[in-house]
Length: 271
Image (tube, rainbow, N blue to C red; front, side, top):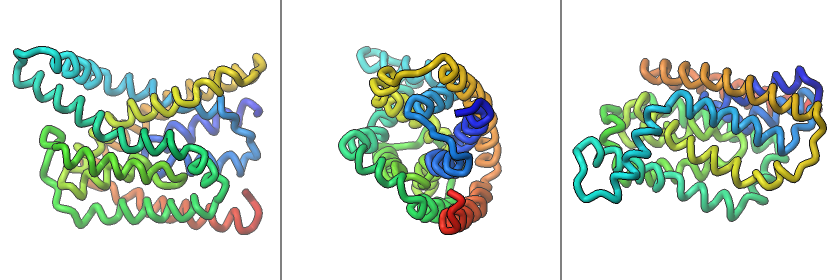
């Protein structure tokens, strides 16, 4: 894959991983448009780029969650430590469903990526989820997330394993339907994304290490990772800003446009 295509795919991954428009769907579409043979190693590397961006942006939260985990083993803990402990285990509970399903049915899920019509349909489902947020009553904060909320959001993430159905869009929408403010639903979704993306990358790490790569391929992967990190940071900041304004439905129109384009481009043989 030529260098400029690595840069383009890095930008696509970075922006769409966290904006509620589906990175998996966009990577399938752009890889087809660019006639770029995106290898497993390159895809995993791009996701590591997104993971690095999450760690940078939410480092304070990560430290707090780690302290919450340690507080699990202490009898005496402050109110704040207890809150962080609960948040740590809520996130663990939320990621278990998609982790189990992802491992058990990874081959079946991979086959779904072969159909661009499935991708287009899931873009439309994402649009509907985002649009329906405007009809929800949202007043609760991330501090009020409970076990039922975490389980519901986790189940939503299972469906987001399908290409074209946005992980962030789905989990945030479920959070909003459960009464969370858009900004707080986005915050919880991002915290869930850290172990989710890390787990997905580690799951395929064996194939990544076994893949034979030339020095030029390593250069392309390295540049893709750097671009993915930078654009991911921009996307995270942008999404939180939009969510703070309560305007997540803005992305619904984009997803409809992406669905129409994907369907038409595939129908006419462009991808």
